[in-house]
Length: 386
Image (cartoon, rainbow, N blue to C red; front, top):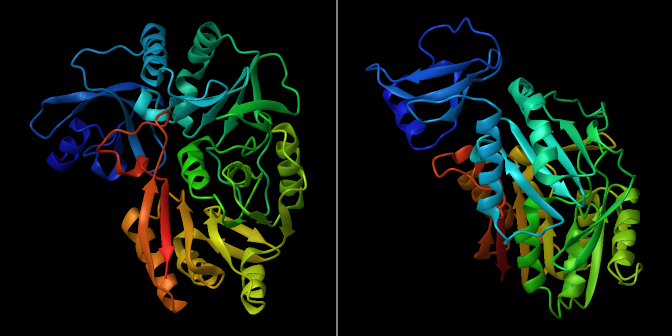
């Protein structure tokens, strides 16, 4: 292992990329192998992954290590101790990938069900051993798994989550987050209906909503809108390409004992609607911009990596003087510097000026090793416009 890679691994980075491996590894998938530096000193142990950009996913830096059920049980219990009582009991992440010692896999609690996310094929090598441990430690009604390994084209759809254990889940579960109620579906092919990693962003948004007119672009099932209403917003407008998202938002409003018609719902392409709003002189005091990393709406594609600056240019036309924008990106490949540069360029192209006045990131149940830059995928920036 090159010295610079060894340094990263010893600092806690969990991946060895294939181009850093100095000789071919003729080993089965999931084999536990020692990882050495150029001088022959042991760095630690990892799981071998034969395909893809990542060749080894680190398991431990300990000189002696065994990957077995006892080790998995200890890691599950350690992940629970780390979280303590600081996270919502009904909707939280229990295991967050490599940070909690489970390469390529995460586990969310949603009500009395668990939802496993498989992000790397290597997780299959230990999943059968892990599921009984999850049943023993958390006693869920059932466990489901989303397979996030295989990519899909915009024309394809992911299959529903796979039932791993326990009882079949109903199509709707009600979960609580900070006193608000949300309906989720653990069998859904992609999101169950509530992005748990955005919790700190929702709290920040609620704190800035009082007496403001609010526009929630890419509103999905409306979690930010519910926060804004409870925070005292004068009005809330939702924009989303899917009418079913607005329908689920109305259900969430009812579940939270709010008026299901309290939020103005507009269905359509965000770019087209932003231009229409600009032409009509419609502006808001607080706008949230939370686009998917990639989307295709009626043949119009959006990529956060390429188009975030253009999106911010369009958004700048509907922000009132002195207003604020909460800009969010969860695109892993769009780094912090590139994201802020795209935001600044978009604001400037619109003839506006803005300043960064607040920010937050992943909540504490989504821990990241300090040296694992790729793990800090979520960027949440609060901007004030002149």
